[in-house]
Amino acid sequence: MTASVQHRHPPCIEFWFDFGSNYSYLSAMRIEELAGAAGVSVAWKPFLLGVIYRELGWKEPPFVTQVEKGRYAWRDTQRQARKYGIAFKLPSVFPRIALLPSRVAILGAQQPWQAAFCKNVMQQNWVLDQDINEAEQVLAALAGLVEDPARTLEQAQSDANKLKLREQTQLAREKGIFGAPTFFAGDEMFWGDDRLEDALRWFATPPAT
Image 1 (cartoon, one colour):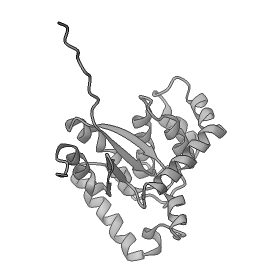
Image 2 (cartoon, rainbow, N blue to C red):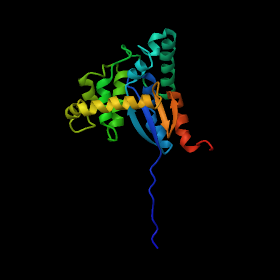
Image 3 (tube, rainbow, N blue to C red):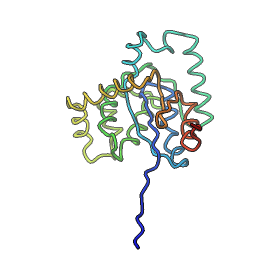
Image 4 (cartoon, one colour):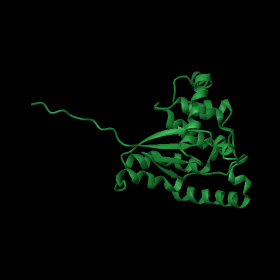
């Protein structure tokens, strides 16, 4: 009698992020290690938070329109980065346009280089204070990750790939996402870097039904 072996895929956490989000940066630099320790895979989901804000009636991010909230958020990010042991530098421009790297990131969905590219871009913005929407910086973030960075950038600028980013941003809206980072553990939504650990624990301790 031959026993059949079933291969189970690990649970997967969806990580919805925007390169211009300071709290997304904190999560991006932590999520793979934490998820790996929990036996969870990560699906990186770039989207354009500014589009969501506009649909919600906000012309600018809350950190900009509410001075006190913005002042607190920057100090809070500094404290959290220090707690996590993550480098952080207040950028000279906020929010930064991140359309080009977002297109590359969505092109890299399910590719082995996607996560490393996203972390490179995050560091460019939140540590090196570079203009991440410039082709030069995107190519630098791709260097060593793909065989032909220029070709990858060209593919990211195709009409089909641009549509993917628009559709993913629309999907974020349909899923009820209103800020970044947002995590989904199955159908359960968690918002904010400080909910990353909670989202990962959800797989191990789902609620009783």
